[in-house]
Length: 277
Ligand code: ATP
Ligand code: MG
Image 1: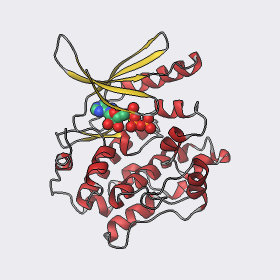
Image 2 (image 1 turned 90 degrees about the horizontal axis):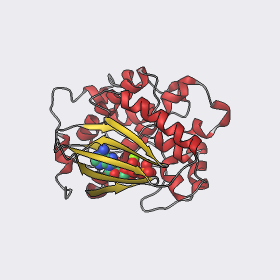
Image 3 (image 1 turned 60 degrees about the horizontal axis):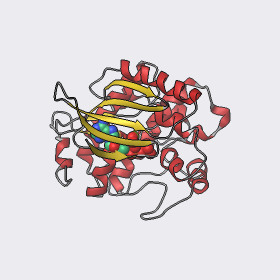
């Protein structure tokens, strides 16, 4: 068993099933949470275990052992897009279009099944050497984030949240839930294109209130001048402040940024070449 990574809520290990020899990822939420929170997490896990899409990381099972919750996940041998970004600094447009295409297919699957992810960000998009990128970690991190005080780990989870999610009056609008995932995808792609978090300048660290004020009151960020018109437009439509104006995942699959490269096979596993995996 070796450690694959750790986040604000726990650790992820690479494990081998003794009898089948198959490799899985085991995610363990270390802190023991209140029974009501655990119940909510197990309910989310139920939904996750029923999700079947080639664009969503499979969850094979979950357990609550005396308050310590763990899940068995499909192992993604390339790690996350966050690791890719750390190693490569920037990702070029043909790869970004392929990332966007696969993530939009995953979001379309989740959204037609009435599931809002709520935590799309580079560390929750996992890659493997089969040229696939899949969405991981829905539900659970948001439940845990809501139990945390606004502190540094909370910033990591909230940095990709759309402006309307900070607005208590906009709760419940079922339209905005899906649109929030589109905002987070736009922000993630822009971060990959520029190499830094879009609301901050390169190297800048920000505390939670500064970041929240920027998301809510600043003009949404846009793609750099040298980007293609298709990428600029894709980012602009995803990062519209009004959630009702953001297109649905299925509509974005026909956006020229996604369709212009169709037919050219883009091999995402090339992104993993600079990583020591
Ligand atoms: P946060 O807690 O803020 O959401 P995070 O997403 O990085 O951050 P985790 O979800 O605990 O935290 O994941 C930690 C790391 O473990 C990921 O960044 C990824 O590199 C690795 N990881 C997670 N799930 C898998 C998986 N199924 N297969 C391979 N690696 C994984
Ligand atoms: Mg995660």
